Structures are given as C-alpha cells and as structure tokens.
Length: 134
Image (tube, rainbow, N blue to C red; front, side):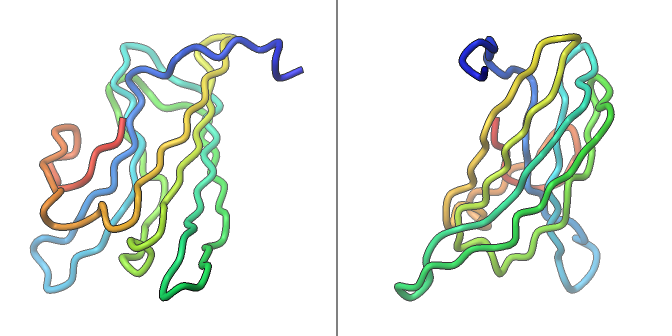
C-alpha cells in the first residue's frame, strides 16, 4: 500500500528549463534533470504534461514518460525539448527515483508565463540561461 511507503524529502535533484542556441537566430528550449548529490539516483521515471487555459478554453498537452536507468552524481541529463508554445500552461514534471532501496518522488510545476526572459538566470551546472526549479 502507498501509505506504507515512507517518502523522504527530495534533496539535490533539480529540474531546469534552459534556452540554448545563443549563437543562432532561433533559440530552442530543453528540460534537464540535474543530480547535485554525491551519489547516483537510479530507476528514474519522469512524467511530463502541460495543462491550463487559453482564451477561456481548457488546454492540455500529451503526457510523456521518460525512463533513465541511472543519473550519475554531479551530472545532468536531457529529459526532453519543450516548445515555447506551451509556456502559457502549467508545465509539470513528476519524478520518482531510487537511492538504494528507498523511493523518492516529487512534482515540479513551472506555472504559466514563468518561463520568460526576465526570469532567466545562468544555470551553473549547464552554463546556460534558464529557469531553475528545486
């Protein structure tokens, strides 16, 4: 039963949306998972989806699922590209992973219109401008 599983707080695992292609005329955006811990995380499952409203009508993206066997300590991994056409939606990334035999999970939500130029900062692990969510 889910109630019998102890869920400890997630620490050192970050989701970031970064802007890339600074040397071209068009930027593109990617979503990364960063493991800042001194140990790997394993069996990483990520579910992503977008949802919200535009002009009073409900909108939703497809739900995507990603799986990574292992993310090494102090490393990052590309989850997926993201289209700026969905920045007006809630962009949700629900992550679950294991450290040894302990399961961890956390939901990261980038709220509508939070992925904007004014909110960009340099993400040290990638040396790219982006929005950090931890």
